[in-house]
Length: 98
Image (cartoon, rainbow, N blue to C red; front, side):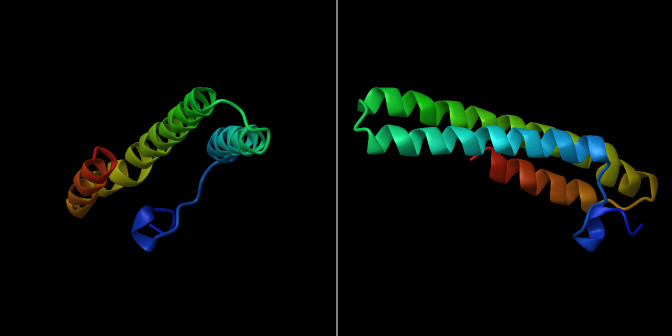
């Protein structure tokens, strides 16, 4: 159980790490692009469109991370009759859907 989220740590596969880090790096690059747009006095609507792209990139990151969590920690806890994971998942989903 040391690999599960109950310890507040999660051992991820190299593939999981790569996918998640790639998504974060994409968002990071987009943020740097927006910084440059502001420094270059670009037009507000153009910046807003780029902010929307970052929001989409972070939503994709959340979807990937949530899927990993459900397939591993939640699945393991359900098999072990630990319903707390379901309650935690419900709370997380409620917070994500504000």
